[in-house]
Image (cartoon, rainbow, N blue to C red; front, side):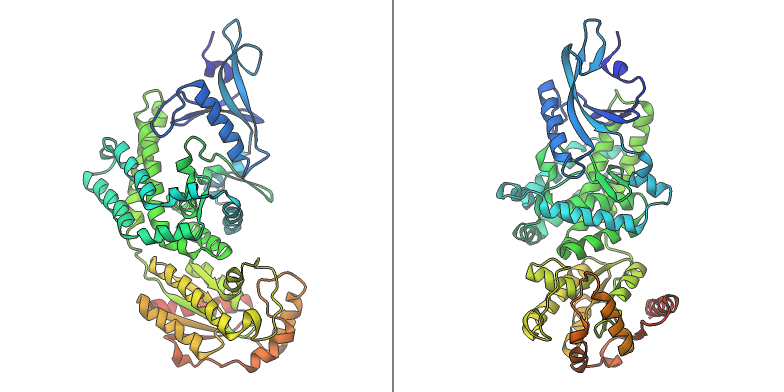
Length: 515
């Protein structure tokens, strides 16, 4: 007669965490809860494990409905042999899942140097949609309040009071605690604002690269938090920050920044930049805590405990570093020009070079109107959604969003027409307020090139509302920029070869860095 794990293990690989046993088969996976009570979770009885398994099934089907199949009983027969299902006495329960190909897991793709920016963009799109549709309520909003967040933060420190000193110095531990609690104390208005904006949702709670799988065009994100609602309820920024923190932990800060940029641009949520460093520090500390627990688990294998020790140290240090000032000085880059002059394409190029956020008037206008970004607005020139008053409101919001990014210590690109001297004057004003250098790229192409681009654009859905019918009237109202209006100026003809454009932009950025 064997133990439960011995009986279920033949033909399966056992993966152990601090709260679960995961048995990997050829085509399926069995996940069992350990019978433990860690304070923040309680799996000590079969009834509690049953409830947790049922929650896991329902909650994870939100992001991967085809992967989570069923909650299955674990039985023991008269010979003392354990089975999945069967007619014997039920002694435990498990979640049965389809086996996903480990080679398609995001962390493994990263190790194999096969994870690309397009994968990151796909994740951002998925999370924007998931968060937009995730449940929210006044009860869930309570978990976005400073008092609730402080409770979680203090719990982390209390539960690691005797563990953290085994991995970092007491001084480092104190610095982490002071930074996190100090941020909560001095930025309560930011957290209140997030509640008012509807950003507190029933999220995932454990977004990590190892939980993300790519199968062709299909994306599956598994293993959300099911055992404690308060670890899943919270700011969408806290959800996103778990994944950006994990990307940095894997040495890809560029991917983390790209994920933030894509998510912010698609959702219109640039205010997350004011909080993401705090939440990354918080998430890193959670991972440090989990690793510390595993280090102390005498039932875990020596190999698992040794790996957990190294992880604990690096996560504690990540929590320490996350809220420290960025070593690179941020810059403000504005990109302007007539309709179809290549502004947005140039912004994408520069975003890749600077690895930063991009705020554009096209999306901002539609987000302020509550419209889908690909829904066209067919106003006559300078009327309706494009009249002077509403356009001024759009520019004000664009610069407000850019200011949030700059104040987080990050560079930002603004993609707009900058048709007037008044709108261009806002560039210098913001740069002065934030104490950063400002640069202006003025995009241009011959009229026939612009009109041809607009004809091609009309064949597909586009974020931009620029079209052939309004081109000439827009051009007639254009007030060309004076290079002396800005700190640094680049005139860029975007009708040339890609290599030439890239070279011009790189030279521009390199020259800026030496100023």
